[in-house]
Each structure stands twice: as structure tokens, then as C-alpha cells.
Image (cartoon, rainbow, N blue to C red; front, top):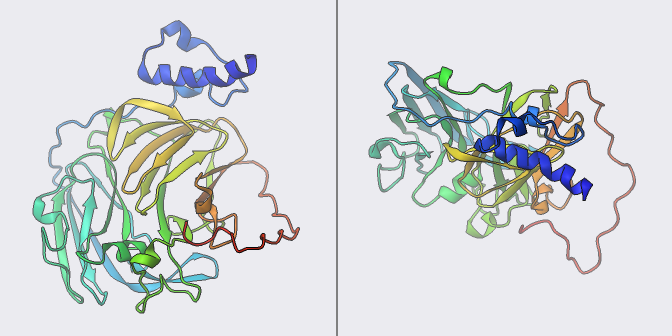
Amino acid sequence: MNEIATRVTPVLLLAGLLLGILPAAAQAETPDPHAYLTAAAVRKIPRLPDTVTIRPTGRTREYTLDIRPGPWEPAKGVGAAAITINGTVPGPVIRATEGDRVVVTVKNNLEESTAIHWHGLHVPNAMDGVEGLTQEGINPGQAFRYEFLASHAGTFMYHSHSHARAVEQIDAGLYGMFIIDPQNARGHPRFDREVLMMLSAWAIADGGGHGATPGGHANAMAGMAYNYFTINGKAYPDTPEWTVKKGEVVRVRIANVSNLIHPMHLHGHDFAVLAKDGEPLKNPQPMNTVNVAPGETYDIAFVANNPGAWMFHCHELHHTMNGSSQPGGLIQIIRYEGGPPPAQPSSAPRPAPPSGGGGHGRGH
């Protein structure tokens, strides 16, 4: 019973502190120092305030997105015929402040039309980027100028909203993150470190390429047979590690552009969910696993109070594979400064799969 109480008490304190329902005396108590979250650590996690009335800043943020086919390696040695934006997958992070005028020129160098949707932003209807509804498609060789006011602070994204090819274009890499910072920084919390995590899935044919159709894009059937999963365009072990210092408050912005649900689980720590879909939560929730559905974004924060090397990964374990091999996919390593070097993987041979061909590789 004592062991259970030791584990539960910090989480209850976290919830109480974030909700403001514990008396000052209870907030001052320090639970077991070996618990993952102490009351003192929890008090370091700030809350996001509501967005106030936004006034135009008079500033203009200009971006150019050059969309074209190109090679990409989600994992070393694994090639995919992708759609790149300015040569990368995902495209560049677009960042502005509330009230900024945002101008994005999209140049289409594909062999098919496209349009860009600003997912979660409040924009004029003509700027929403839905081909066949709010605009004509951007045809091959043409450009389109999007212009709108950065509406409200939060974590958002942009992606293809082609009339007939949105699935194929997004699966091939036509997406990126869009972050709007608060206009009044004084009224918003500061974090010691911020990291981004854009989740996506790929259906890569055995011979390279994306999917199984000529031209390199997945068709509807191939698109559901995802076999590689990436964070910011890369699959483990090619995902760059995050480095943190003990005592830091780390903000993680998560966006899921894939067609799958990803329950993202953090080892060794709890975190607070501060915002969902760019909107601050009235009652931030303490947890160690957040279920990120397609199209959702989350802002979470944790206190780096448990030194070591830790995993933050999808707990749909088929999503932590590269093809039929594991580990891979949606695994992010968080390493404390001054910690031990990475452990070397075992050189022992892997056991042969059971007969009957019942392995887990494609189709999950």
C-alpha cells in the first residue's frame, strides 16, 4: 500500500496544483524525493492563459514554399519518392506572432494540382486552401499567394488539401508545422526548452518509392499499408536526440498529420497537457501517455527531474518498426546532459520469425 501511495501522491498533487484546488499547506509538502514528480517540480510547469483580443502588429512575415517531387530517406538506406517543400520533409516551420500579416507564396512544381490548408488557423474563407471549394487548384508550374492575419497563439500545421489527391500528397510529405507565438509575451509563460514533434506515416514499396503506383505516390490501398513512421520526417534511429538539463521545463509541440492514432508515451516522467488544437486547456491534465488522433495537435510540458536517457514513443508498437524490423519508427530519445553514452545494441542474432508468415510489418 505504501508503494502505491508513493506513486499516486505526486500525480494527485500535480492535478491539484494545476487546478488550483489544493490549500497552500498541501502545496508546500514535499513527497517522496524518489517519486517522478515532486510538488516543487510541478510548480515549475506554467499554465497557458487564454488568448486576448488580437491587434495587428504592422509586421509582415513572408514565406515561399517550393513544392516538388524529390527523394527522401525516412530511415538510412530506405528511399522514398516524396513530395518535398523547399527540399525537405516536413516543410519549413512557419512561425509568426499573433497579429502579424502572414504572406505565403506556394509554387507548385508537381505534375498535378494542389492547394495548402492552414489547419486550425482562423483565416478568411478565400485563404482556407481547399481546392474546388475556396479556390481553384494551383496547377503545375503556377503559384498562389496566401495572405492572412496570424489569428491566435498555438500549435498548428499546414498540409495539402488537393481535391482528389490529398491523401497521396500528404502521405508523400506535403505538410509542415505552423506556430503562432503570443502577442503579449509578458502574459505568457516561458519554457527552458522547446522541441517539435510532427508525426507521419509512409507506405514505402519494396523497391523504394512511395506506395505502389507509377509516379511514386501511394494509391488508396497502398496508403493504408503504412510500414514506416516518422518524427519530423525521420524514423528511429535516425531521429536526432533531444538533450535536456536537469531542472529544465521542456515544452513539446506535437502534431499528427498521419491517418493513424498514436498514443505517445513518455518514460520516467509525467507531463501536463497544456493545450489541444491550439487552444489552452482550462484544466491541464497530468499523464504519461497522450492519444494523438489524426489532425490533432498538443502542447505538453514536463520537468526534467529524473536524469538518464529516456524514450518518448508511440505505444502502438507496430509504429515503432521500420518495415518488419524493430526498433524503429516513432521513438524519440531524450538524454540528459552529462549522462552516460548511448548503449550499444546487442550483437546477438535475432530469433527467426515463427513459421506461417504471421509477422507484423506492413499493413499496421
